[in-house]
Every structure is written in C-alpha cells, then in structure tokens.
Length: 384
Ligand code: FES
Ligand SMILES: [Fe+2]
Image (cartoon, rainbow, N blue to C red):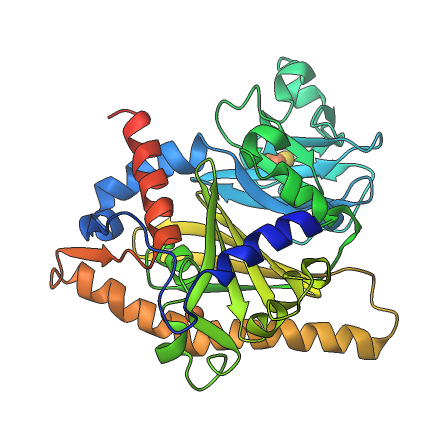
C-alpha cells in the first residue's frame, strides 16, 4: 500500500474517539436465515455465484513451473489450472474425455504431460489429447480433436490466479479485482512463496466463513483469551472495491503511530491485518510479514471446505525459518478452529433447526453488510 494511502487512512483515526465505535454503516441489515440453510437457495448460489463468477484460486507462486497445476471445485465443476511451457495458464474441466476421471490430482507434481489415472489416456499441458495408449484402434472412430479437455476461463495478474467455470470469455485479473488492482500491485504478491496449506471441513454454510472475517466487533469478547489484548475491537477501516469489501483490522499500537508529529513518519501497515474478501469465495489477508489466502468451497448448504494457505515474502532459508512459518499457519488454523468455527457451527445449527428467522448485521459491521449486499445483488442479477 502506497505511503500516501496509509497516511490518508491514518488521518481517519485522528478524528475519532478511540474508545468509541467507528465507522458506522448508514443502516443495519437483516438477512433471512433461509439464505444460509435453504437447499434451493444454495443451488442458486452454486449456479450463479460459484459457476458464473470469477474466483480467486491461488497465488501465482503455487504453480510456477511448467506442468505445475492446482485444482478447484467451482460450483460442482471440477477445475484444473495448469502452467504452460510458455508461462501462461490454461484451465480445464478436470474430467477425462473417456469416462470422466479427474486427470489432474489435487497435489500433483509438475510434469511434461497429464495422464489419466483410470485407463491412462495422456493429454498435453494445453488439454489436447496426446494419445490413448494400448487402445488407439478401439477409439479410431472418435477423432482425437473431439477428446480435448473442455476449457474454462482463467486469468492471472498481480501474482493472483482467477478462474471461472461458465462464461468468462472476457475474464482478466483487472476485471476480477474490480478496482483493487493498485492495492494488490503494491503488495508485490508475485514475489511470495507458498509455505503450506491446510484443508478442513465444517458443518456450516460457506457464507459463515466469510462472515467471521468481516468484522472486528467480536474480537473483544470471543477472542478475549487470544488476540483481544493486541487488537482494537471497536475500530477498523472499511472500504470496498466493486463487490469486494476490505476490512483493515488494527493493532492497538496504531494509536501511538498517529501521535508522531510528522505524517511523513506515519506507517499503517505494521499495525494492521488487511483483509480483502473476493466475493464470493476468497479472502486474502496481508498480515505485516506474510500473506494468507482462505478459499471457501461449499459442499452443500450445510457443509463447507476451507483451504488456508500461508505465503512468505522470500523462500525460507533454513528448516528453522520454514518451521517458523509452518507454526504461524498452524496457529492461525488453531485459533479459528478453536474459537471462531465451533461457534459458527452452533449458529448454523440454530438457523437449520428453524429457531432463528434472520441474522442482523449492525451499523458497526459495514464490511459484512457490503458482502451480503453484493451476494444478494449478484443472485438477483443472475435471474430465477
Ligand atoms: S477415464 Fe480417463 S482414461 Fe478412462
Ligand atoms: Fe475471529
């Protein structure tokens, strides 16, 4: 983030009472519980939000070498993204044109060609069929050109990789970022290295994962035993880029920063956790010395897979350095897994059981309101 922008944001703090609450949305919002638990509503979300919108899949460093790949489930469409020899990316439906087996495994090493684990068909990195070993004659009446993997749209820029299962002919990183380009460029994400990822599944609706990260209001109470002593619970910065809300959580040390007499000495980033939610399924966190990416995959209205990845600014120089980052990732997954998500499971159960008609988002939760307005607007625009 440019220094100028950091100062601009810090100036906002000058005008508020640090013991008060700020900033407030113009009005609160009520969201019907059925939006979280109704299977028909979920099917519409899968079709409209998860198949027809771009999704943030990974940082570019996760698939740097030719033949490296990553897989994702985009609203029930199995997708694979593969790095080409010329450095570009291609995306495919990850289903073999023979009888549908996934051609790219979840954690595959870079390789010169893709091969199906079922009967061994071989594909080029660009998805064209290379050969059908031991069975060319059996398929002589099916032209190879009709057996290429079906393409899906991918885009890369600012060190980020996006994919869209349906449509997306015009997809670019800029269009997906919807105005967050300058900020993403300032983080230099192209230079980061993946440390590791953790995948967990939870019994709650996918939106509740994002809800967890979209306000700092709960820090004082829910996290009183962990992060509350270091973070401000009542103050955070809220902005938005198109449909994507951004919330910057503030460490208490930020209040000392604005006491420095010269603005030229002010620095915001050392005192923040900046979270940009890529509606609908991704959350990228710029956390002082590292980046986190949370990718949300809905399995049903009531079950969600969460992939948490941590990236360091440079490759770890030693085993000790790697252990430091791995511990950081495990702590992150541990705090959310012990303090946030068990409660989230109970919230979902209350809605599922019909005990609660709606959730209320307060004026002190503006990023949360923005997120749900974006989701509801995209669904409304997506038709019946
Ligand atoms: S399903 Fe892939 S080779 Fe048969
Ligand atoms: Fe939390």
